[in-house]
Image 1 (spheres, rainbow, N blue to C red):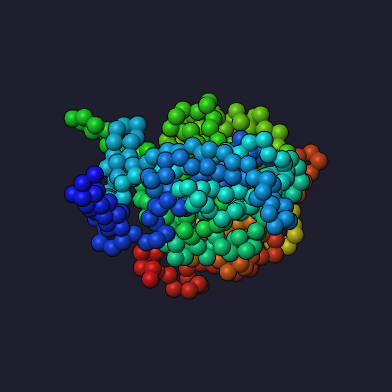
Image 2 (image 1 turned 90 degrees about the vertical axis):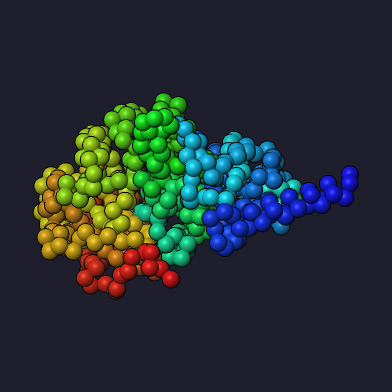
Length: 494
């Protein structure tokens, strides 16, 4: 080989490295927590199939890693627990960050100019033991291993706890990081972390997703993630042809980043965004992609799933809260969503509905009958369903400061249509800890500094009736924009 050829090849290599460090459209190098390399990053665990015997892992590298592997071993107290590790070949998918392929054609992403392609790798462990702690790690390039993570499979019965977050979305790396880390400090052995949509601001932005993965760090790999798509996980595309049609589709980054249950009964556009998880005999979770406007199809799916569920506690989660009054509706889809889903949720007396979207905190309940005021601490009331809206990010919306809202909170009357407004908050990012132990479901909403702001218990009687008992924090002062610290919009973060 001539010296000229060698020098030309070396020059090409230098230009490739420079392009990766200084992508077109970016005046500065990518932050080290965004740039893909041959070392694995964005490692995440998700639940798949039977959580007692399965879970999935997903991670990312640059395109120099064409094939790679994953290892798993039962975690023990031994120093060299890893000597018994089993090795598996991962599935690899190449994703062009600059040109997304969607159902209506190709879309050029202005968010990722110059970033080129990345490789996403995944594997689903099967045949595991229930209620067992496993250690696992992933490889990028040859010898480029992640640390060992430890994840526990589900027990078929017994106590369960999990954490639920509303929108992270804005100010994710600088401020949401303290919320998810406070949640981990509070409930380090949670079964899973549930993210109720709008995880990021721009679903096609690799930088936004880099922030989300960086903020959670190793937590995403230790505690399985249950992601719910929101409207910001959708992107706008235009079909090809002389009369292009504008449509909203789920970001092509969703499936490569999250390995989720596939339900063949659903149409393709709802695969891995509508799914259910029978976690144990006591808990069945149903995920609705409320950002898609095929509400009737989703209602039919949910009705069939609930009809066949025998779990003690059944929880529905979606991004959009359909139970707000019409005055809070933002577009025509809100009324259509409410009409399609409310009858199914009421028919099956779903225990909890966990949502986000409106960047505030609110809890409401559907009473069995018209109730008297819940003023007495510990006074139980019969309810059919409890609904929650929450937000964990830096964007907050002031919708509760009106006098009529503040005065109605906790009075036991049906304030929002058929619902009783039990607790609200403004200017307060939160995370929620839910614990299930047999016939009792306990709930805490905590602030970013760990304080309990809202709490209640649901207890099921032998006849299946639910009794709601308010916790003491629910009777503290209501946090509103008018009586909390100064607020600036998230884009003013320093």
